[in-house]
Image 1 (tube, one colour):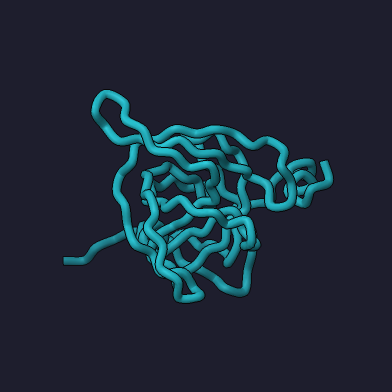
Image 2 (image 1 turned 30 degrees about the vertical axis):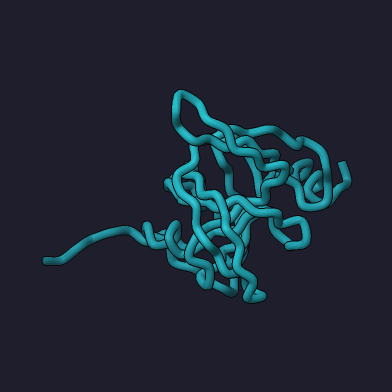
Length: 158
């Protein structure tokens, strides 16, 4: 049986959007070495809603700016132990998010972690990429660049 699927080429870094969270632009690193995607989150707290576990957290979509931080609430999908690139294990909450990457929308499992010391607020891992993406490590921003003002805010120059 021949299976046909389209591949969308992505660069090693891209501007993505997270429509479920109301985030139009966030710069993400495309990381084929990571299994699961990760999102910068802080002030993470768990609670129940109608007997279902939920999580409330804050996100800052900009790398070098505190502007536009927002509070988000999502149902918890799972909890996983994740080994960081430095070898440290961390137990993380997993949520499911729709993300728009290079003009395609995919549902991805995303872990929540503090990425303040990292260069990107979001990491897109293999599980999200296996839905028809090919990574060109020599290219960037194949889905287009965020508007000039957004890029300035990302650099802390609002």
